[in-house]
Image (cartoon, rainbow, N blue to C red; front, side):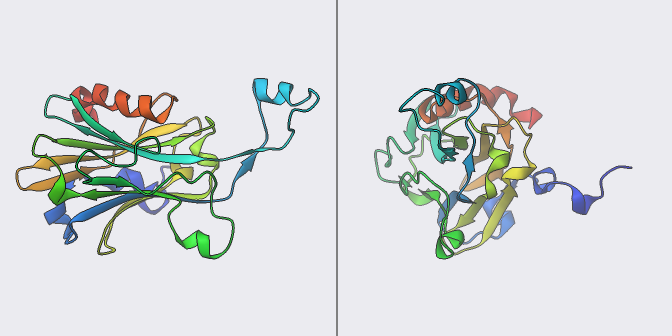
Length: 218
């Protein structure tokens, strides 16, 4: 029996639309990740090394990062914003800071662990594509994040799209979560949730330019 619509992941039903079509009034987009504290046992080489004296046997705390890359019309990289570079050159894109763990106390469960602010009115005219990447720093499956959510809102609080990290394929360590494309005086939003190979966040952002040619398959 096939899954009913209500049982399928939200990602299946998000269709590309412009911000105007979505009724988004805010001039700042806020892509973010939210999850609760998640500690996973060591595997592979890390597990074997933990048997050595003075090597910690504690589980690895999940660290999920959000990054953003700004591309020109032909896919040339203009700027990257992530925990290693928290501002674009004109301050139009701002990273909220590197959170190394998920929410621990009750109040933290209602805030984003990492987020980026895209000030659309400050984005340079030569930027035509904005990709948002979500990745697991320790190469842990994103599906294992406790109550993990990817969330895209505007600064007025309007929800544009969200998805549960648990809905991704189990071996997914990093994804292109959202593709925001210039559309004349507007911007269109896609949610490809495209799995990409694990790497440092800076290199993951570089990989996004390779997917522009495959855009029609998203």
